[in-house]
Length: 130
Image (cartoon, rainbow, N blue to C red; front, side):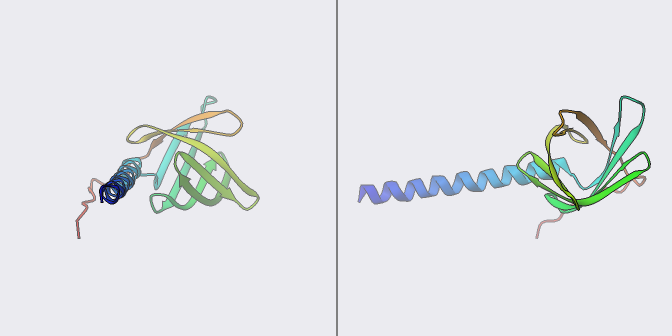
């Protein structure tokens, strides 16, 4: 009987841990707020812009660097942001410094800091519970 009680207790602890981990992940994704426009000033004074659309963990993107426009799909798994293009995808290591400021480490070793561009309106989106 005590072994059955121990198994039930262990199942409850595992369920609680998984539920808590998922809630923490969702909180991190909502703070990250990746969909939107992100801007990076490069060392040569040029500016590059990333526009993400979709959900909090996948969607479409467009990268504007000079006159070049690169489009494709993106997905976020753990701290790896994968940008998928027609010729293949490449992973970026994503770090969130604070709300509205992220770092992307590219496979070639370069690092870029992006700032979220604020929209021109002053409307605050309210979240409602169902």
